[in-house]
Length: 410
Image 1: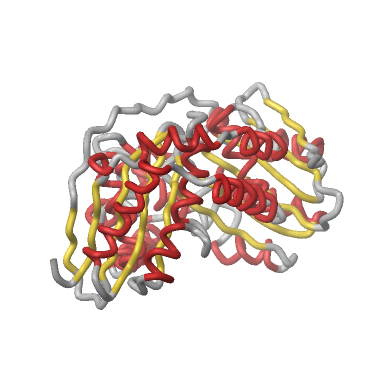
Image 2: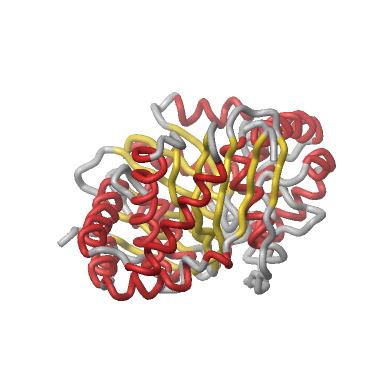
């Protein structure tokens, strides 16, 4: 049995605090999570969630951008942030005794950003560079275009980075309006794992987070998506990059875990079917894998490969393998192997305090509770071989797939 030591507090203003005490470590990971991302945007402000994340590091009414980093790094700590389609997280790491100082810096950032016009202009240049980095990296671009394709018109189709036009157009008023609407107490989770004390964190939240409004609960629109088309993108590159995939079940659907297990069998790891078929047996590709990128109500599932050789042949082999699974099913041997692979990856992944903090926070957002690690292991164990073969019948229907190809020639 896996030992887990979680605590939860919900404050009257809506802030939720979740912690996990890990007595065997000396450090901590602390995250401030807002339940907002590119899914909360529209055509005119697409990209503002990500841009706002950047701007919170540019200075507050108390600290310059340099002082924000200095105040944490001089203690041996670390600050970072990320924006996803559904969340924005600001987080810090450090030695246990320095948690109050890191908390003070993060709470200052989320409550007192300046959004100076000069900083916005400079940072727009940085983000434009990031935008073109994605455009110049087929491994990144293909997944962005794939999800834009399969999720349209659902707001999941908005790219996190936004559009070049929007990035260049945002001003101070846009950021103030966005944070006033989404950076609210009822939209905030404070989570921490490691060498921490739950009661101290609750006290810090009560004393330090006093400048955010409560706001109102905003339910995301979840439009039913239509069928996707095939897309070809011409780039002056040496290899052909291909994604073949579709939308499927999200976190809130219990069948998602079955899809995850099937995905592992098909294309995760060196013993998977597609790795052995495309790389080992046919020498067609250096990299090939399946993926399952999950959100609240939908996931994107598919196969990605790049090849300097015969992309058409590789694609045919992928679909032939799908047909074999539909005809003959998954074997007991690969089913058992995939279960152990998933459980092993889960446990090893959670040896990081940051990964544990992320898992806790996402669990609270998606399920309104902390899903215990042992429960996740038990859920994997509970899946039967017959359930996997049944889910394959709907998931691997070849006519339901679309593809994105990036290549120098069609």
